[in-house]
Image: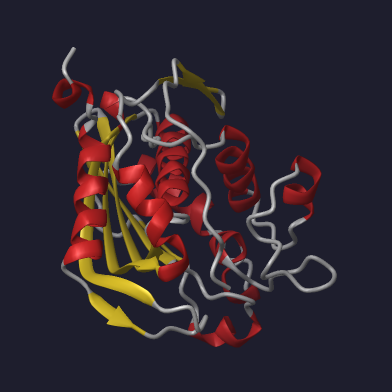
Length: 261
């Protein structure tokens, strides 16, 4: 098998976005003070029929994206679940008690503290009216932004039925291309699988629109190192009773970068 044949369509798209961001970018200051290279309106189109969308040129950690999904889907706002799993991705933003405020999962399960469970409503409406155009989850809540340790980066999900298949559209206002986006994509895939199973659809396509896609200057050398790695086909997977199993995940080395806070 040639290198070209080995490259997964998802990872090919991802590398193209990285290349645009490195060589055809806008250099910007940002809230972290680190500085970054940004590109406007990056897009990914991924089909779960082609495998689970994990990067293969560098190793991704299953424990990290599975823990984040469980945290998200349960509407939790404290990072204790991550601490118990030894996952440190939210440590830098949590307060001394491990709280993040009414972020992500809280808005999905209890929007604006009004007992509005958007996930429950979504499941119900997809079953009752599959052709509807209001199958939406919104995580951006201006009324509570000042209570959040970090406002949501991904803020809008919309679902679309297509015969037996279920598709998902995502809007991200901001995306850290090296550290954040690969794990965000894995989270979105798990959300689509979760919703599809509960509504008796086949999870198919995820389209992601990233308004400000960027590489922090502290991640630039790691990004370039990743770009030189061989890539492989996306791993196979099984999803049953809310449990994801990754099968035959072939990957490159661990490539790390410092988080910009």
